[in-house]
Amino acid sequence: MTEKEAKAYLRDHIVFMPRHLKQCRDDNGYSEYQSLKGNQRCGCPYAGCGPFPGEGYKRRSTGSTSLEKAEKIVLKWLITGDSRSRDEVARLLLTPQKTTWVRFEMPIGMKLIPTMNRKAR
Image 1: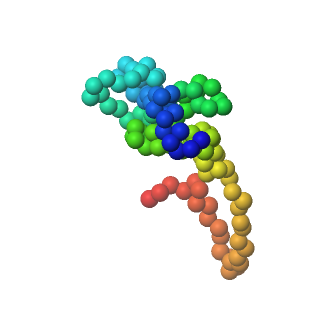
Image 2 (image 1 turned 90 degrees about the vertical axis):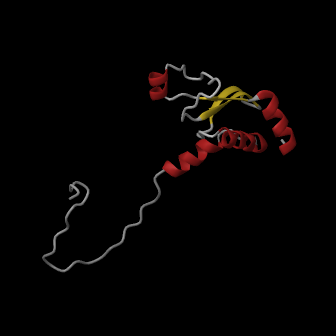
Image 3 (image 1 turned 180 degrees about the vertical axis):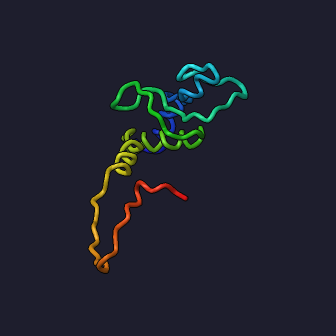
């Protein structure tokens, strides 16, 4: 999809709504995808809601609390044809990488002190 087509599709088919987190729902009495009226604001991330090409109707979280950034993210998804790109980046970042071990020698009589369970002073 070209950028021009993606912008038209975004304008005509995708609606942006905040996905209220549990704390926001409890504190403010909002439902999960309730639109805010007037000057109401919260810090919850926006979700692009609508029929994504090839996927059907979806509510895809953009992970952004800014409406302008959320629109740019969904525009990128429409241009590339991949609305899972944000999830893929997160998966790659959270996947454990290969660990490299370094061997070194210590003088005789020195002890290794584990640092994982020590309390900070």
